[in-house]
Image (cartoon, rainbow, N blue to C red; front, side, top):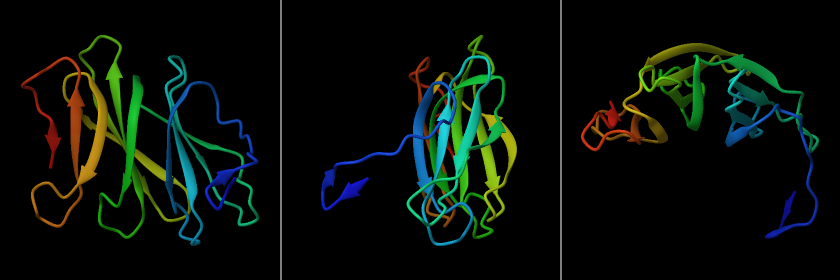
Length: 154
């Protein structure tokens, strides 16, 4: 754990095979940072969420299924404007034709509802910001297979 710029100790948590991204956010609205783990397991892709127990430890992971695609990156923001943090995760389809953005809408208790949207042409990375100045978070994607394809989801 971090202590004044040093990381002398660490704690390990079993969240499944092949985690590719760790995202921090207060997913259950208790004031403590939780962690969402984006997993690319080829056979069992999930978003795994560990909740902060407030004593320096995390809960066992809660797993939320993804689309049938390989996760590559994720971001945290309140995408639906309800005051609860959500997770957006980009995923590359196994045939390069079903690339997606997996969106997990948080309910403020640590639970999520999963939905998907079209995600470009080989999305490998994602960033969040208000790109069109409308007050809502937008996504910018890096599309591995396209130089001119869609790169922003506003």
